[in-house]
Image (tube, rainbow, N blue to C red; front, top):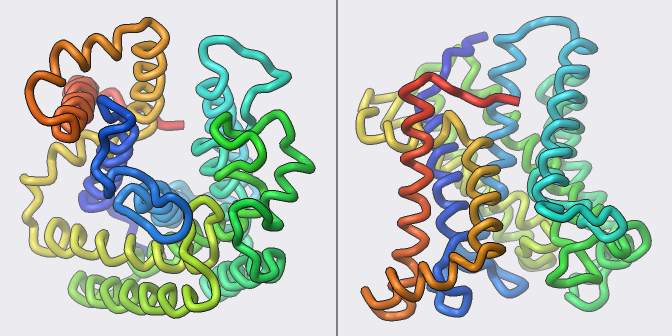
Length: 348
């Protein structure tokens, strides 16, 4: 099994983390271009690509890294358990920072969902072959659809009901009565990781680069078509992470990564991607640092005056808000570049 490090995967990961920081950091929350906000409920925007891309990438990385690491499945699963526990803990610490009220702290979150999905997908990966992984992905999507019973209304659905039973007082402060990283919607999110694992098998195969790229484009297009067809019965919805959303976004990730792979690893045009690879090789550090700094800027009262005095005079409200976000991305690129030059790579 071929497991060479893929420059395209680092670049794709970097593009994803840079996109996350961009959409999370507008100068003004009320002045944001529509693609840089989540869809209000059904449908999708550019912003709704980011989280499923992270999960899909974790599946690809898992396939390649476990092959390089080697060892018994039990040993690898213990490694996955330790890593998942650390990621989950970091997510909790970010949720509570800087005051930790454990009676009301939000338990779910982006890192927490990544941790849970990574752990469960790891177990499936280690004890099944690719066909079993494909069946597991399909089974999770079907199980989710059956549980939801065709009801995807914002104010009354099965996922919201379960959240109210097990997460009361520990949900997202914006909603308080349901959580976008809740319990039931984690099922199709695990399938998103499994789709990445299946793509990882393709990349680790003995096929030529051209054949792998062709299968990436073919598989991605097929998943986009399948997700669009599923939308006739089930809306594409990020907050509920519907099965149609999982399939559609896996197809989108496969197509976009296929372009990165064909250009960078297939044809050797890699110099342009170095800034993205700098970001991608310290993705978890940039995720945590960008979140902490954003919280500190708001709590210290610096963020508002910084935006109003430096960025607001430069352009229209929409463009000034975007300039602030771009500057925030550039600031963390500077940190990532210093870490890269000093060969500091934080891995959990």
